[in-house]
Image (cartoon, rainbow, N blue to C red; front, side, top):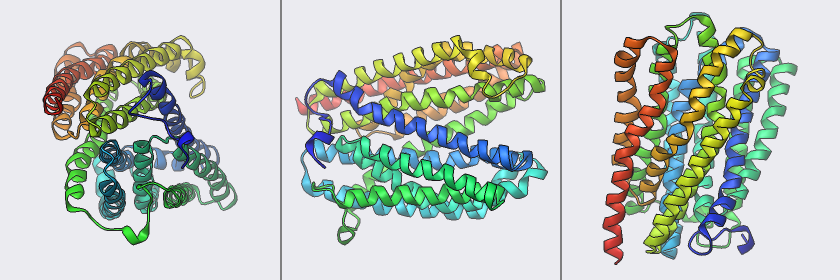
Amino acid sequence: MSDTQKISLTSGSIFRNMFLFALPLMATNLLQVLFNMSDIAVVGRFAGSIALGSVGSTTTLVTLFTGFLIGFGNAVNVIVAHFIGAKDTKNIKDGVHTSFIVSLSIGIILTFIGELFCPDILELLKTKEELMPGAILYVRIYMLGMPAFAIYNCGNGIYSAIGNTKKPLIYLSISGILNIILNLFFVVVCKMDVAGVALASIATEYLAAFLVTLSLSKEKGAWQFKLSNIGINTGIFIKLLTIGIPSGVQYAIFQIANLFVQYGVNTFDSTVVAANTAAMNADALVYETMAAYYTACGSFIGQNYGAGNMKRVKQSYLISLLYAFLTGAIMGTLIAIFGHQFLSLFTKDPAVVNAAMTRLVIMAFSYGFSALMDDSTAAARGLGKSLIPMIFIILGSCIFRIIWIFTIFAYFRTIESLYALYIFSWLITAIPEIIYFIIIYSKQKKYFG
């Protein structure tokens, strides 16, 4: 990798470099959202409502697994960034190779868990009986791709730590385009409906994993991947688990919290339920765009912490927080302003559109404030701390929401009182997250003098 492909995380303007660093990440995240939408579009358009419902009913379960691996990939990013910032060549090499073998192992473990327990989990999620056969088939095929998904996110984390976010974008673009082609081939030509969509997904996941691994094997720095160097450094292994497991759980826990929100939505009529489904499409677009700055925050803080430059650590936190907040506020406002046009992509029912606008307007005001929680969590992870932030997330974004639903929402019984739990849960979680970051930052600043 040439120096022109890298963005310096430890020198130069943080405002400029972080923006340039985050742009490919935004594109990567948004492409992933669009490719996932294409899966639903193809199966819905060409395989019928039962197949569509079968795939759609697995969303929460699949996201539990993929979210965990994305969170673990962020831990890889932080740990490798620490070693790069410290110019610790041996640990960079050990970090890369330990991360690969641990990520692969976790991917395999999740495959076995998914294969063994998917019928029970889908039943627990109240999957409709007529959708159950297709849902089980889809999950069991999709779970075979977990090792590849783990490897891709590991490689993505390593490239983010280096300061090169363009290569993962290229590989995702290639695999995503192939995913659409295979979806159409398997579903339209081969008439494989649910199985076809799942096969297309895992085929492209393995392609992305292969491309990122091949690319890292051709690097010239200490982060070059070599099969002959595969092994586990015990110290790095422990760090990976210490940061990665809480980070992965944190990503997955939001899906559990959302189940309770859905419970509240389901107490209303079918128009409101459909409106919530349509409006929620905005969430992925906004969250994933904002998430680019959380990854950037972890990478910038990780390298500068490794280099002992605590001033740039603080600046990286504040600048990423500003970027993420503005991104959420601006995107939310635009989606609310053009809400009717946006919702027309998903429904033509005027009643559903009007009901969905309630959610879009409330969330337009709320999105930016989620950055206070998420960016502070990413900043703490950048300093190597993820267990305490995970606990705050569980308390604030899961338990608090459950309490809200059975108290505030139960009292008012309005959809507005249900949607209000988002901003309040984000703020109540953000307060301890910010305080915790300030505490650990102050301790490390004293250590480095």
